[in-house]
Length: 167
Image 1 (cartoon, rainbow, N blue to C red):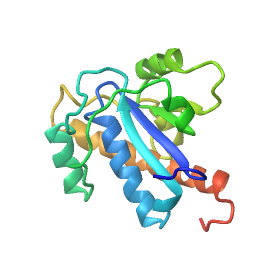
Image 2: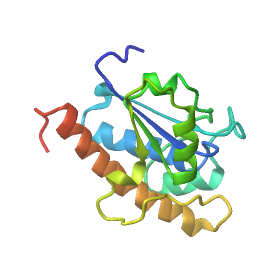
Image 3: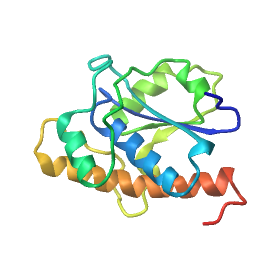
């Protein structure tokens, strides 16, 4: 795949089976709805190696599918130092994972590293909570937050990278 000229975004959480694949699937969907699929490379990864090669958590997939997001083809992977050179944006779901990413990031890399919820327009929280040990309402809450931040991120990218794009 040729990524030259594309905006490359990596979503990160701990295991890459709940929050970050949700963000990947939702943002991919929003980008497709905007007709910008060819302008992006979107991926997700975990800061830990717990679930390399595993599909997203079944509860995550179920909640996403109910809202029209398909993540059945996604598989967990661990973030690596080279990702910071490959991606324009590396977005963590929470402060703990952001701290790990800061330590992994090579010093000379200028990609945007921050929290995904920086782009949320209707949620004041800074962190997407990990729904893994909770009930189904936690997965719905994650989707609400991810949808909001995905809208804001797409708006940001369109304004910053595609100044000729309609709003």
